[in-house]
Every structure is written in C-alpha cells, then in structure tokens.
Amino acid sequence: MTNPDEALKRLKEGQHPYAVVVSCSDSRVTPTTVFNAGLGEIFDIRIAGNVVDDDALGSIEYGVEHTGAPLVVVMGHESCGAVTAAYDEAHNNAHAEGNIEDLVEKILPSVKNAKDIDEGIHNNIDNVAKEINNDAIVKHLVDQGKVKVVRAYYSLDGKVTFME
Ligand SMILES: [Zn+2]
Image (cartoon, rainbow, N blue to C red; front, top):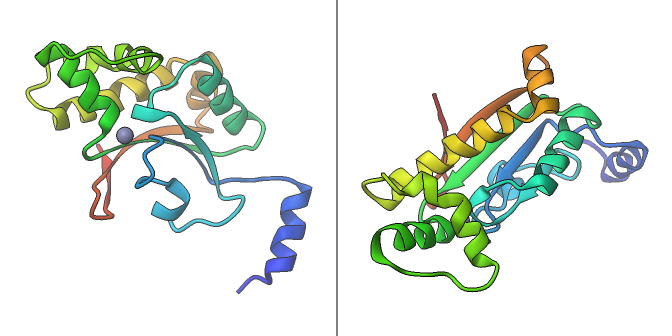
C-alpha cells in the first residue's frame, strides 16, 4: 500500500490521471467513487446530461494533451434527469426553465426518435462521444493511437457497462 503522505507529495509535482471521464452532475454518479479511484486518477468533466460545450471540450483537450490521459470515457447513466427533461420536451410538450433549457436543447436530437428515455440516454452517450471524437485536438491524438474515446452506461445498482 502506498504511503498517503508519499502519494500526496507526488501529486504536488503533477497529475497523470489514467482517464478523462465525462459524466453527469447527478450526485449518484460520482466517477471517482464509481471507479473506486483516488486523488490524481480521474480527470473529471461533469455537466448535467453528460453533454459537452466549448468549455468542457477545452477541459477534455487539456486532460488528454497536458496530463497525458490515454482514455476518455463518456459515461451516461440510468434515470438521467437531464435526458428525461429532454424526452418530455420532445414527446410531451414539456418546457424547461432558465439555463436548463440550453442543456435540454443539446440533448433533444438524441431523444427525438428514441422509443423511451433509456434509448435516449444511449443515443446521447453516442452523440457526445462523436462530438468529442470530432474535436480537432482529440481527433489528432486518436489518429495517432495515443487516445481512445469509449462509451459507458452506469446503472444505479452500481454497475458500469462499456458499450461496443
Ligand atoms: Zn444525469
């Protein structure tokens, strides 16, 4: 077992996380806890609905380029409130308030043709992974074989399923 003082001393010198994880802000889906990780191991991007905007993409670029994380995990989850709000807007004429509407609009294309919320959650994971793969800096590293973007689904019973 690593001495905790030694580990903290090493982290003062820099970070070398093994993954960038893009996940929802949902309090039940904290990546460090889900993956049983410690300080310095996961570079977190968290926005409700695990969507990305320019700031999130900038954070991901930093994670893969400057900390050298070789893996980007896009992790959606069961019963996601943000995807549910988008689904309700697309299918039940609901409307979100304030800036939540901006989030919902990002998710709408993923839920429009989905038969249920869970399919929308899976589509949203696919679409966010595509968006990250299309980021110029990420794409460059992916093409060089230095970075891989993978998709995962977290069930609230604690199970992570990596998607093919
Ligand atoms: Zn969520």
